[in-house]
Image (tube, rainbow, N blue to C red; front, side, top):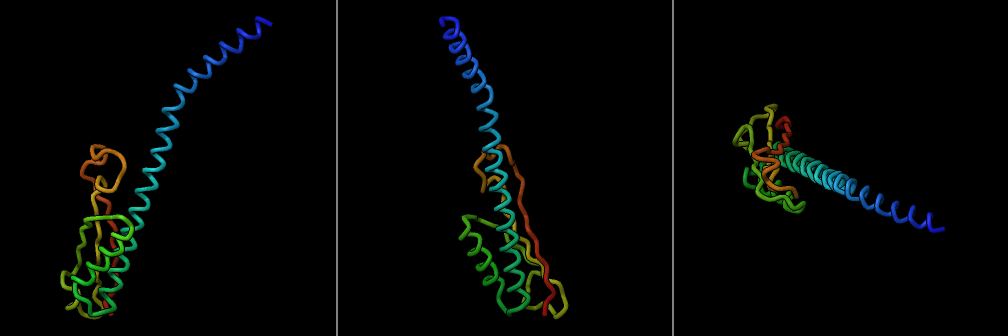
Length: 134
């Protein structure tokens, strides 16, 4: 019986060593998955904002300021701040029928992530949508 107790205590030590080796790996995978999901959510939010802004730019005689306001409103409701919104052509109200109108929405990846800014550096997440002016 004494021999069995010794075996259990040695096994308990092995489990501690296994946990100390595997736990950092599991935590890294967990945070990596969370960060990847966060970037996918960011990209999809930018796609939605560029789509809505481009749709408004071609179907209504909305000013550039109104279109930017709509895109920023969508992004701020999703927790995304300080996007860069560009238009091509620059003045969408003067675009002629049949001319493509492109809206590009971008945001620095480092401003929207949980990881330190050093990891992403100057990378920018961008979404672009084009419609033909009616």
